[in-house]
Image (cartoon, rainbow, N blue to C red; front, side):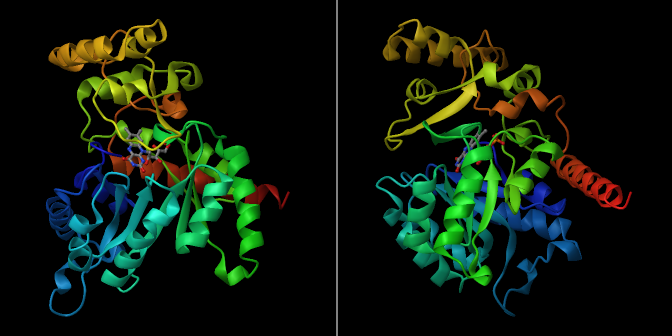
Amino acid sequence: MAKAATPKLAVAVSKAGGLGFIAAGYNSDNLEDLLEEAEKLLLQESTPDLKIKAETEGKGPKFLPIGVGFITWSASLGKALPCFPRYCPAAVWLFAPANGFKDIISWADQIRKATAGKTRIWVQVGCVADAVDVVEAIDPDVIVVQGVDAGGHALAQGASIISVLPEISDKLRELRPDPLRQINMIAAGGISDSRGVLAAMALGAQGCVLGTRFLASYECSVTDGYQKAIIDASDGGISTVRTTIYDKVRDIHGWPQGYDGRGLINKTYVDHVAGLSEFDNGNLYREELNRGDAGYGTDGRLTTYAGTGVGLIKKVIPAGDIVKSLHEGINAALYWRGNASRL
Ligand SMILES: Cc1cc2nc3c(=O)[nH]c(=O)nc-3n(C[C@H](O)[C@H](O)[C@H](O)COP(=O)(O)O)c2cc1C
């Protein structure tokens, strides 16, 4: 999550048994600093479970149990690449190429070469056609199937994971009938607790991505005002909307055709719908920045990307506790099901 997913957050998630991602985001300028910070944190936190090999310099390649995400229409592979053999992150997440998925062939090829295949290639898609294109272009290790409920950017037109995930699953089985060559699918979009994870598993996902939930964690770098807006929001299908206005007022241009972002509805969006020009809306946005934390919420104007699962989030808590509660909820449900089948 660009500007939110810091090394501190990624390490806390991995330490708790998930796989945390650092956002390299729109550019890769400070990737080396981010990975160095993550490495330091991992060495401090080192437990056998994390399989940190950062200290093995000289005895073999490092391996950091975290991932790195890139917005590929704007990030630079050339700048990012030298970091890969040096840090060997467990996974790279590629999203939104400018001209279709052939654009990420060089990303996948060069990263695989740089880490001898140790860095797994994850690609985020939002529809069946894109999933097929990705498989044909780069044979990814993981496809992240992101439904329209997700916070932040995604395809403007799409379906929720409840229909798109099983359809992609069926299509991938057609493309890859060999059970030993199945591609892992991870579900994203609208999942805030273990009930969502269990539902995604029932749809055929091997794992889940949670974004919005982690915005309300101690380790996330968003402001207090942003976190308060997340906690205050309810009824996510009503309180959030997909739009491009939240990029335009922040002078972010260049998203490929067909993408927008889901965020909490605030005055920027309400005025946009009422006909306020992008220029005037942008000026009001810049003025609102002076209000700091008070600029968030329904009466504010500051962009607050969030998914429809926002209404399930009630407290800011440590990221590790979020992962732990997901594991507990999943284990309890599976245990109950196991026992119920014996009745
Ligand atoms: C504030 C925010 C920023 C995000 N930034 C990115 C990004 O830079 N790149 C990306 O691939 N996905 C981004 N996402 C999407 C997340 O990676 C994730 O797939 C999504 O949040 C999952 O849906 P959920 O928010 O409903 O949990 C962002 C999401 C949020 C909420």
